[in-house]
Image (tube, rainbow over all chains, first blue to last red; front, side):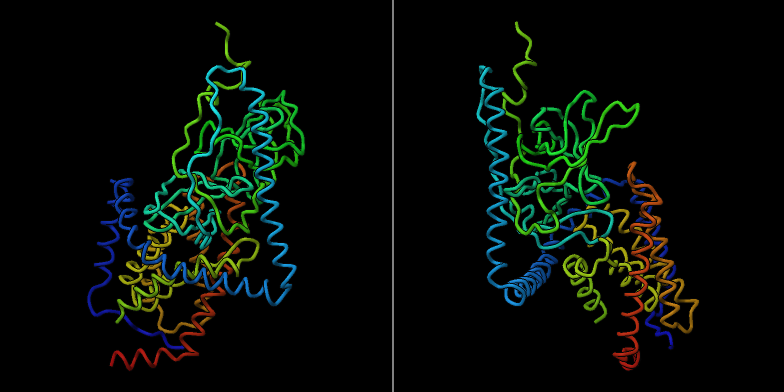
Length: 292
Length: 166
């Protein structure tokens, strides 16, 4: 098979080398500035690319829906979908009600108690997955023009999905809760022990830094603590499946099954304004407040 | 004409990579179409176009991923440039040669990425090699070989391009 020669007749090697050196030096001397410039320039490019991306996502969804809805099990599939949605909604509601009940018990003693309210949210559709293999992300069909910004929390009625790490004019990239590079402040609902939820390589998550004296056990629910990370308190993250206590370790950790099946998420809610904990949440449980 | 082809390629790459490729993934690993395209462009169009297209692909791909912009641009640009240099040394290219070349290039690019990421305690270099780098390299090589075979021999692009250049 003969090699095809499409090369231009000028000294391409010299031009290429110069271009490469200029860019490399630029990136080494001004890494954040140059990255910022490219990210800004990416806004309009992202808008252009978002059109074929949405079109292809639509076609893909259409084919997928046609296959699952009409070819495989028409009636059962539809019913199953409805029931799943209902179950997710009820799970989320249940988790929030439990949290609300626990919060009521703890906070009624506080003088300046304020009711917990979810901040305004924007609904978005999932139109793609990460373009590489190193991160677990979703691509949403809403971006800066819809008020989305990096570090905003992303949820479904069932619980936490992840947080936004990049935005263009009309798309956003969400780092999933199951990605090892993600960290969300979590709280065991029953014992009130706090920790950090990180993704693990196998596709689930882990709650780290649980105090050694905690009596957390399998089956306990983990919710957002609301102290950092763009999420209000009480959103369901997952259920503990195993507790790991290592000999000589200062903390224990727990493996979680995330409440949201991130491989099947189609629509999400993005918490639009940065979350600020209420006064009651900042003060913590009544026992922690010293008496004057 | 060439600019238009490259523009269509750049705009079309992200939808294919983020919507279609996940359906082809095995054990959560999917081929990197951007790397394959950049490699082919570098081989057939030279190091300048390989570098420029590589930088552009790296930039656009990184806008739709959590991957670092710098790393993505350097990796793809470097692959395009290296493929262009390699293309200068090759007179006859067989699909097998291309597959082996892509395998090596993909492994090197993967190792560069793994080395530059801050891998945590559960993701060491050995994990990166067996879970992502090697499976992706095999995928890239197979898909690159298939694209090369389909485009350059089945569609007889060589004759079309020669006629266009004449």
